[in-house]
Length: 138
Image (cartoon, rainbow, N blue to C red):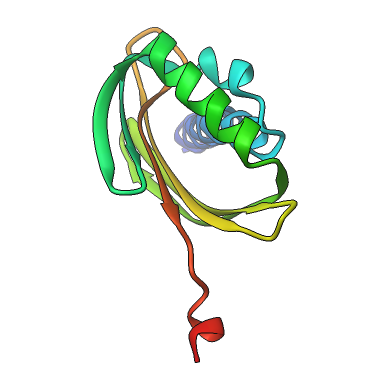
């Protein structure tokens, strides 16, 4: 009985460590967005990334996506980025956050991330939308 309990506890600990590792990798992506560091994002970009910016969608290479993000960050200096929702299942995760600029403009940024075999998390899709706070529309 003690053997089963010990094995069960060890499996729970391994599972918790694996989940923490996944969380840390997504946190590094979130931090790169918070700090507007496109070059830090580059190590997490898939070879091709679907970019949906302001309703206009295209599939870009890793280098093109990096340039798109550099341009976005250069035109929209960050004040704050807050993750509002996150989740996932299996090897696929997502997060959705609010990106506020120093000029007061807000964007909703969504990232869809997948863990590739033998690699860290890679960003499969980035979506950036104008964000209008419903409370301000009244």
